[in-house]
Length: 331
Figure 1: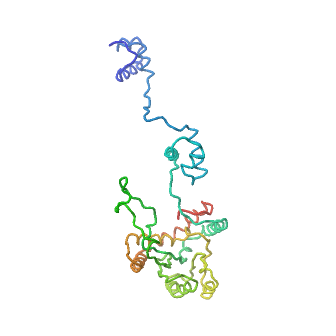
Figure 2 (figure 1 turned 180 degrees about the vertical axis):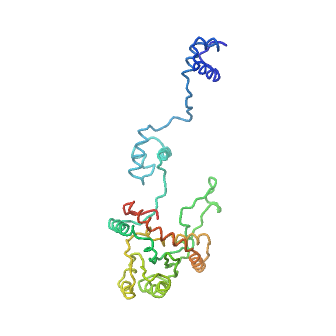
Figure 3 (figure 1 turned 90 degrees about the vertical axis):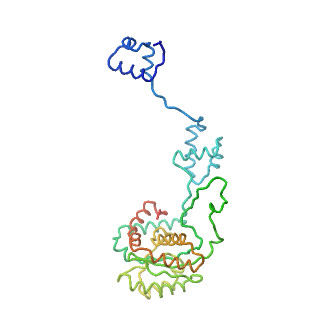
């Protein structure tokens, strides 16, 4: 074998094995027939990481500046970041760098606008009710109104997988109607023991119609199905807190739950509305009457276990409000 500064992988393995066994350079040279330099190179050799692709266009310092600005102003787009930092790289590169540090672009969640007084009231409510026993939550009658649209969304963002330049083909497009087509307003209630009556609101809901619903729909159900001592929950809509409504509650000796404004995430009935809207999306009713029938059927089909799980989540909702310092939560 000729003398060489390089050797094969098998030769390298053999050289390292012989040296490990205590052989000297001269003994290894005689066995393999190589030079001392070749033995030295074999012992020093290390597998190098293979580098592929073009050279990175941003420096570590530039990467840190991009990430810092995105964290400081999370609503800022990649184009604005490029302008503010006077970068020469493309916006695609900026977005790639942000993804590398776990800051990809996401759709922001829509939440109610909370002012300082709202945050304080939410925190106060959560702290006062966080230690409530589960049985106490079982005595609450949860109520709310909701608008159900004929061609509404399923409640979350929808995606489609399609080839390039086919966005307007019928099978890849999402059909809409101006203003969502027909819609209905509904009032409903539920408790730990299951769903209560659901009522279709005719025309514009005002304090007079609200009191009629309380008198003719809610009260007969509550007297029959709710425990002897129960509490009525409602939000702070003006028609709910009008003088006439307050007088009606006092006259009928109904205990009201003090409720923080701008707090749909604390009201478990919102989850039932989401269930109804999802059912409407799947059923695809063609007109307002079919829409109302679908709502009634899907409401009646809500199992008691679903209601119980939602009511039992109130402790966790209070914990979440406190954990987020009074701001909106995932609920």
